[in-house]
Image (cartoon, rainbow, N blue to C red; front, side):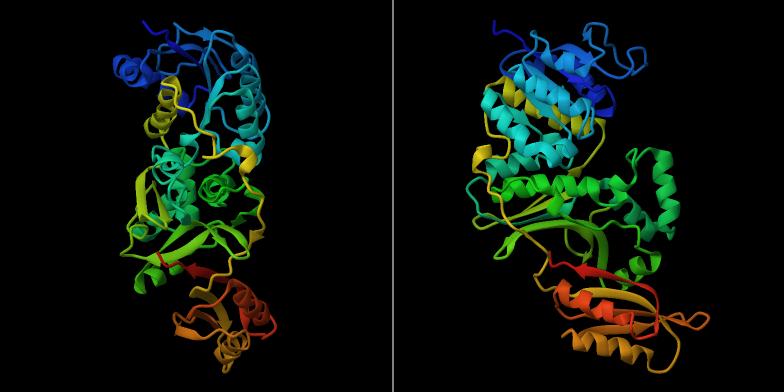
Length: 428
C-alpha cells in the first residue's frame, strides 16, 4: 500500500477547521484522487483548549507553528494563519528549509514576499501552492498556470473582495448608506481585523498582484498596485450609476502596456448587463482575456470555510499525487522586473461634485475640463440644497492624468464645495 501523505496545519480558524472537516468527512474519496491516503499528523493554533467544533484528539499538537513546520514526520505544511510577517512567514520559511511542501491561503505573505518564497521552494525542490489565496474556491490560479498556459494574457480583471461587493450591492438594494452597512459587516464578522484591508482595497490588491505575476510572467510587485477603496462611494453614486445603466464595483485590473505593467484596484462603473455588473452579494468574479481563448469568466464564492478549504485541499491533492509546477507558473528566476505604469488607457469617467449655486459655476467647471482636453458626454444638476448644487458629469474617453489636471483646476474656480469624486467607467 502507498504510504500516507502526512500534513501539518498551522491555523485552526475558519479555513483550518474547514480543511479538517473535509478530510474527516471524505477520506476515501480524497485517497482515491490523491493516489494515497492524506492524513493530518499535527496541528497548531493560538489556543489548544478552544472548542472548534471538530475532533482534533488524534493529531499531535504544537504550540509553536515554526516547530510544527520543522516536524520530520510530515510531507507538507499548510499555512492558514494569515499575516505577512511574524509566525506565518517564519513557519513557511522553516518548512521550506526542512524540505517540506507548502500550501498557503495567505495572499498578504505572497504579495509582500512571494518572489523570495517561490525561489526558496525551487531551491529546496519542493512545491509551493496558493490557490486559496486568490478568490477563495474559484480555481483561478490553476486556470492561469495550467489551462491557459498557451495564451498570451491580454488583461486580468475582476471583483476580488466579497465584503466590498456585499456593501455596494446592499447599498443599492436597501437604500442604506456606506456607514450603516460597514457596521453590519462588522457585526456579521465579514471584515478583517483591520477593516481597511477590505474596504480600502488592500486585500483585493494583494490578490491582483499575484494574478498579474502569473499572467504576465513578472515579479510580484504589490507596491505598484494603485489602490483606492470604496469609502467615498455614496448612495447618490449608486443611484446615478443605475440610472445610466451601470453598477459600481471595486474592480481590479492588470494589463501589460507599452509603458509597463498597469495594476489598479479601484471603484469602477461597469455595464449592468455585463457579467461583472450582475455579480451580487459576497461573490467573486475573475475575467481573463487571452489572445487564443478570448474571454474566460470565473465566478464563485470568494471566502468562507468550505470554498477556501476546498482550494487548499485541491493543492494538497495535486502535491500528494506528484504534480509539480513553479509557484507562479514559471521559474522564479525568470520572472521579469518591469516598470510600473499608471493607468493611461483612455476611458470615460463619472464625476460627482457639489458647486456653489450661483451663475457661471458650471461654466467654470466645463472650462477646466475643456482646457485639459476633456469633452463632456452627459451632465446633470439635481437636488439643490441650501446654496449648493450637486452636479453629475460623464466625460468622453480621457486619460486619468488629464482628469487629475482638470480636477486640480476645479479648486481654483472658487465654486467647488468639498472634494469631487471621479470613477472610471470600465469596458468589460
